[in-house]
Image 1 (tube, rainbow, N blue to C red):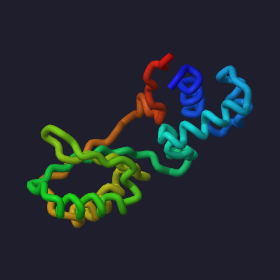
Image 2 (cartoon, rainbow, N blue to C red; image 1 turned 135 degrees about the horizontal axis):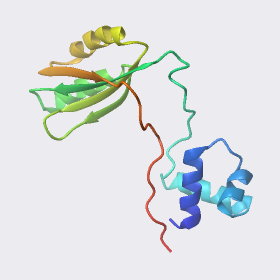
Image 3 (tube, rainbow, N blue to C red; image 1 turned 45 degrees about the horizontal axis):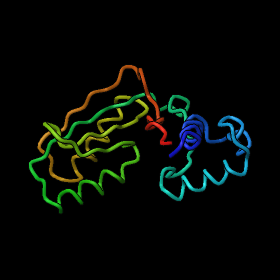
Length: 154
């Protein structure tokens, strides 16, 4: 990845809705090599997909919770059952298997805190769990989809 690729990845992380010409102007190339680079970056898997980021507040989704899950089971059957069940829950926007004291971390987005009770009931019905606790976010101080990019290679 050279400096042009790096600039291009930074530009599309900021706003992927620009034309190839606008991106080319921003990174200092013409449109044709910029389009080729975009295609190659996609083929190499550096660009997975292009999406629209929705405004949760305007959709009435004003509450973010982080749910901490502990389990006494760590076998493959249990993990398959739990992960498939959680993936089917649209309120869960992020889901991680963790190292340390917490086994799983879920980020859940809801209209209001009272909605968590219904989500909690569905969550504990997915698979046997040892402990489920949650914390709600009072304010998002930093919330980005932009990844840090490694230095360009010459």
